[in-house]
Each structure stands twice: as C-alpha cells, then as structure tokens.
Image (tube, rainbow, N blue to C red; front, side, top):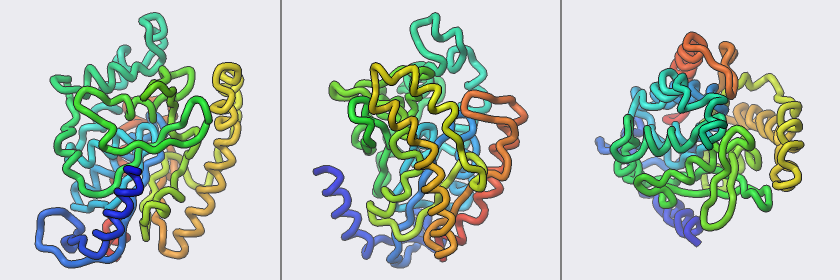
Length: 313
C-alpha cells in the first residue's frame, strides 16, 4: 500500500513539480513535466565510479525525481540525497583498506569478508566516524527504492527511505549482502540478500514508477557482457540453504546482459542515458588498489558531465 500511495503522490506532483534550469532545489523554478530517474547498480569496489558520478551531479546542481540503488549503489544514493559530497569516496578510497572493513580476518571475528556492521554502524551511525546525515536525506520529496533479494523466494523486494531509521541501516546492509562474503540480513523475520541477485539492473522498475527518462550508472564497460562463472560457483555453496537465491544467482548474468542491451536501445530513443566506464582500472568487486580506485572515481566524475544536458533536455 505504501508504494502505491507514493506512486499516486508522484503522479499528481509531476505536473506541479518545480525545478530551476539546472533542476536544483530551492531556486527560481519553472514547471517541468518529465520525471527523471537515476539508477546506480552497485558493483562492490567498482562503485567508486558511481560515487564520482553523483559527486559531479552535486557540483552541477543536478537532481532527480526518482532514485534507485542496488548494493553499494544504495549507499551512493543516500550520500547524494544527504548532500554529503565526497563521503562515499572516503569509504571506498580510504576506509575500505582497513581490516575491519573488508578482510578475510573478519571471518575469525564473527563477521564475513565485508563487515557491514562496521561500515553502517561504527562508521555511518549517529556518533560514527563519518555519519550519514539521514535527516537531510529524508527531506527528499521524490521516490527512493532500495533493491534487495528475498532469501526465501529469490524474488526482488523494494524498500524505501521510510524503512531506514537512525542507527538502523539494516535495509542498506541487506542490499549489499552478497552471499558468503557478507552476512545475510533479517528484516521483519525474513532474510534478505544483495538486490543485484534478483534485479541487477532495475530499469523496468524506474519506468514502472513513472520515469520518463532514466540515467543508468553501470560499473563495468557496457559493451562487455558478464558471465556466470563466479555466480554459479557461489550458488553451489548456498543452494541447499537458499535454493531460490541460488537460482537467482544462476540467472543473474543473463538478466544483466539482456537489460544492458535494452538500455542501449532505449538510449538511441533518448529515454535512457547510460553512464559506464570504458575500463575498470583493475578494480573489481573485492579487488582494489589506491591508484585504481582514484582512476575509476575520476572516470565517473568526468563521464557524468553529460548528465546535466540529458536531464534538462
């Protein structure tokens, strides 16, 4: 019911929404009739690229009517909504090198490779080292979807800003919970995993929510199809306990590739703008170097220069 009510509110407000020539908030405004969406699909350490994209959007005073975050992409979206430029850069480029953040030693400390409690409680919570300004983020009057995968059904489940509370970032931890490498998250008695398993590129969701145009940020070259080798290997480890999630893992690469190809077709029609790196600079989901992270961030910042024109057009 909550999602349906939000959709109705946004549908009504689309014809009353006021935006400046740069689509910034709180300036002299003119009416616009298009609903602009933004999607960040995540990708572990590669999504420092997405943090560069959204930092450029802050610098260019670009905003969106609907924002969808998958995995690390949800964290990027929240920092953007909070107006905390550069925050996620620090998490990727600096904090991620701490053993408490990500290391095999975490397995021996009662956590997984990625210690999501450290990232979203110790660092991001109230009184943390670099807290998220959740109050500011919740002032956003557009639609927000955080994508997760239901551990029982293997189907997609969308959460909203209303599901995030001070010092309770379980929803964000859920969308980042890559099987084996992260601890699964429990919300209202149900287990949830990384949203990229069930819906790796939620493009249909953006249009379902009413978007007319969508900026889609990917964190791997769009022309290179992903393969299922790693997903198939991970699925074998969890198929007995979470068979539906294992099935989603087996299907993820094909779904990702199909949606990426369709995004390129929609780009030709002017409905989608795909922002993707031409190279990942040696960075991958779990793999990183300081130099590679910096280079990938810089690529995201530079590639995002085209977003302002697309949004205003």
